[in-house]
Length: 281
Image (tube, rainbow, N blue to C red; front, side):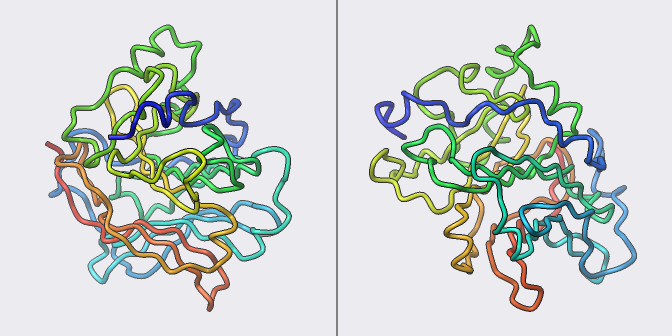
């Protein structure tokens, strides 16, 4: 477990303003509750499919999904053109809502909320470097927009955690303030890996980390957080994800996480791979 003395002074994330970028989002519906593996229809085509592009810095950002020869998804992710690393705002953050292509419909992912944080965010002793947050969101935009302190049930929803079996192994609320105090409007409650002993203010060298998010009894996103400086080293990272014991809706879920630079396309790639069918239980 993380020591309360390490994280208690700060919330995990900064509060964000109302999401103006949602006007640009083309919603992609996930599998409805009660869906079963037998009635998920694969696409007939194989290969890579991309969602609509949006401007980021001097470049572009887009989601993608890859399908195998049977039309089943094997990987989802985000691609940033190399030019997106330049021309980024330096004093204010940027939020993009990136729709997935229709071919990702048998995954649980509805969209990616991409945040550029030029000044970092709370807790600054840990995450004060310029970085990107990639929220792979499994809830629709209406649900995410409803995460608002004006909701009379806001605190109760923040404190309503999913059953432990639905949360990736070892992920917990950081010690310190209550879940309601740590909840971020438009996002939810963020969880950290309790076995990560490196998260010590003043000693932690933030380059990348994987966070998970929950809200009102649901596990709603995995979130890679990656510094701009580390991304620009053109890393090659592949690692297994910590997984939950059970799933709240049927679909193809990731088992691995990767960060790469695609030299042929001249794009940075943040991926969730090894998609595997899981039945709701």
